[in-house]
Length: 272
Image 1 (cartoon, rainbow, N blue to C red):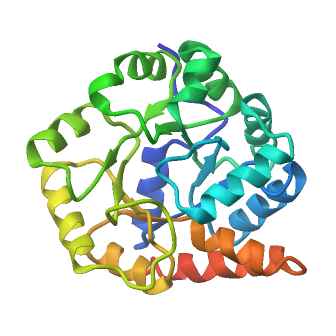
Image 2: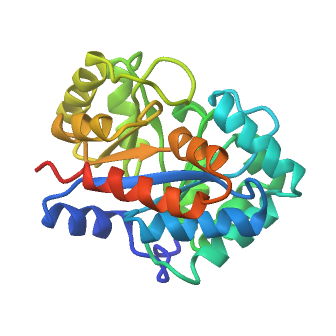
């Protein structure tokens, strides 16, 4: 087994560092190559400058079933710009030129399978990736991916949702590493105006069943959402569609607006 990537801070060290400051973790999401390679790379730099504790990078896919219209549109723009899996790993390597915070990939399993499972995880490790979440890969069918992740020093991250039973949750947390990704809403990704009470209850239920760090995503789009999930016991919040909307709606000053939005979201984690 290869040790965790030496050029990157581990998830465990990052969560410990942030917790010691009395803060929650803020993880912004971006689709690699949206709207093009260099522009999205500049956006990542703004996210880091804005206070990101870790990053979630989406590799664009033609049929992203777990994603709503905002991320689907970002995937289309990225694919049209020529982004593919190999260029995605190049994208990560470029990010590693200016930050060592943890980087997770959000992908669809077809991309892993097409490249070859072990080759994908090996390239992920070499590029500087900490963790991989395949949105459409259930843990019951993930033994090959889990083995490849372990052999290549990469965390395999899984989703848990409101529909996840306590029995199944126990199995998920046994296989998961890095952190547990908790889906805040029933449905696809996308900004929501309000955070449901059931989301807070979900975080509380997840906390009973695992010692893994818990990060909440899907629908987290406002600072008050971040404050609520952190106050409920989550270790971090993942914000994606809201940031993509900022980029799309503020083309002329998108870098400033993305950094500003990240600063606001990060400040919202300081509730402990």
